[in-house]
Image (tube, rainbow over the protein chains, first blue to last red):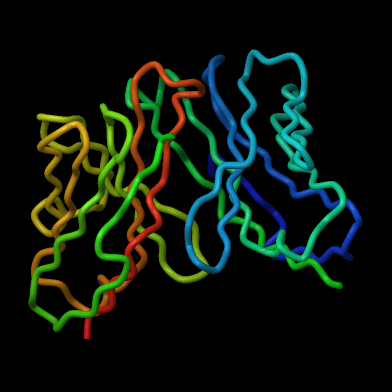
Length: 118
Length: 117
């Protein structure tokens, strides 16, 4: 079974509107972390937001928020007020703190290509 | 802070030659470095994890004799693709982490695009 599932290969959103990118995960660890990264066409990985498994509140960073539903094992990214510069690949990733070992490896989903239309 | 550089940013080589890619943490000491490979329109796949002064731990299916990793210092790790072939053409990304940092976050380099002719 895949550890990180992103079911939307591509998404389109109108400029200034909000968009939700889906991510579900699978782990038996109690302690883990969830990350979202943005990868523009240049290839660099840009960290957006983090949610720890013990965090009770949803993480927010500017226009980014993470809708964390632990029981459903989902960690959807919400981007508010989309901008043209938000067009990029978006990856959800999980860090497992025990089964991943002390090196805290990341497992990535397949990504969602977001296109913001003017 | 937490800047990671990679060199070169792109390289083209002939089949059968070896290519070395450097990954440096510029403003922190990286206790662990990771190497990923990303094929076009695909996700990042972890190739190996290395701790300074130790042998790298390779993921299943990654040939350790083909992808040589050296982590000689707390700021430098190198990936050498030996006897490269066209199927090794890919985008190689390194990341670095420092024990004790928030989130145990990995900081990513800008990537190296390898094309083998």
